[in-house]
Length: 182
Image (cartoon, rainbow, N blue to C red; front, side, top):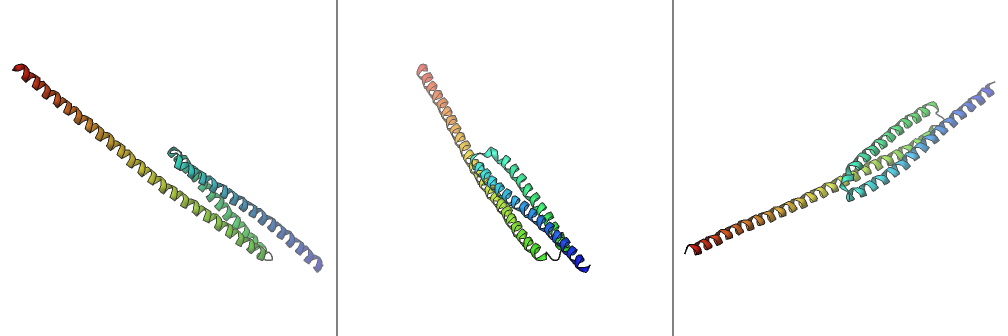
């Protein structure tokens, strides 16, 4: 009877172990999908940054798009945290599988660290683009101010020439009057 109970216990433990491993495999698959999605998001961000240098009007749309991407990354990180909590619960249920689960947790932590590093890199890239766009805007302002100054200087020259012509006309009229009066 004791042997049968041991066999039944081992069978139940093996089933629990198989379920836990299946759950871990699914978790890893979701994490790999998140990593691929993050890489695709990073590619899209790079494409958006290239467009920013070409067209100022598309900046606002790109910023909104980036905010949605950051929101998605934050959501993915939240999901990873929830998955990690589930994994910890599985560790408590089965001490026998502790070594394998700990190894998987270490791998998950490394993947999460890589995802976090990717998020930090994206934020730094946005900062660089914003800095570049700020310099671009300042340069445009300087050029615009130079054009306005040039137009004002041209207007002043034209005004001075107009006054000079009017003065010349008055002098000429005065000479003509003087000549007619004599």
